[in-house]
Amino acid sequence: MLSLEDLQLLDAVRATGSLSRAAERLGKAASTVSYAARQLEDRLDALLFDRAGYRIALTPAGLLLVEQGAQLHAQAQRLTERVKQVAHGWESELHIATDELANIEALLPLVSDFDALASGVRLRFAHEVLGGTWEALLDQRADLVVAATNEPPAMAHLQWFELAQLEWVFAVSPRHPLAREAHQPLSMETIAAHRAVVVADTSRLAVARSYGVQMHQERLAMPSMRAKIAAQVAGLGVGWLPLEKVRQHLAQGTLVALATQDPREPNLLYVGWHSHRAGPALQWWVEKLRDPRLVRPLLHLNF
Image 1 (cartoon, helix red, strand yellow):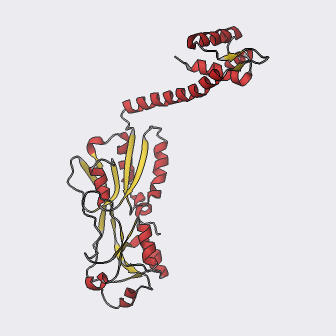
Image 2: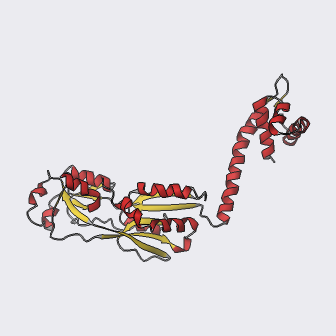
Image 3: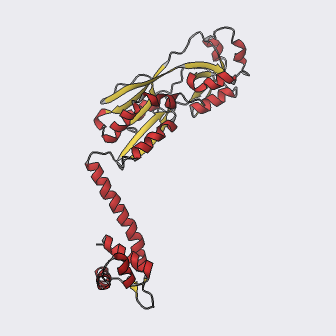
């Protein structure tokens, strides 16, 4: 069995080229270090020290032992510390799924604060869209979901709270043909004659959803809300956008808000988690997400 003292001895010899100087470095008597070196070779039945020259050096076997042994010892220390953390209730990993509407950058300061706890819990973040967010919690791909849209589903052990309310605006590029229809509320039939820009639902089980899009309406599916906004600014289609995320575009005239005969109701956004799996890390994140000061940077950042 290789001990930390064995590795320290090997490293000291490699650095100093002398058993006596290695002893000084380790704060031990030279005879003690010399004896320990012979005992280590006998125990492993391997020649670890090349004593032929003026300077003592490590043999290839000795070099291999000190390099890989140090790595293994560090891994063992990390494993020991992690076992202690888990034994005190910390989760080994925490999977957090944020709806694509949320700005994950707003959570980075919380990651820094969480790191300061030195819990050893590995954090894994993922983006989901629409039904995919709740579904990630349902099939246990996530322990915590942030900014999930629509009503919380029927799910055993589900706990949740309302995070925010999101207002929507129907908007198009001023170059889009519908921009000339701003004098009256648009009917569904009028809107359906133009291509809709949508964010693709990441649900793997349910039928993909897109609000306000007619069954036979042409669609341009984008991977994110940021891309959807950019596509509509470019005049590539029409659709509903989060008001707070496009206020700057509306003020600058790169998007035009249009009235519709069927206005879109505000969305409630939720934080949800499995109550029966609520370890210390999950509880910490839930409490931090209750802070109302987080809502604006999380949801209202303009693109």
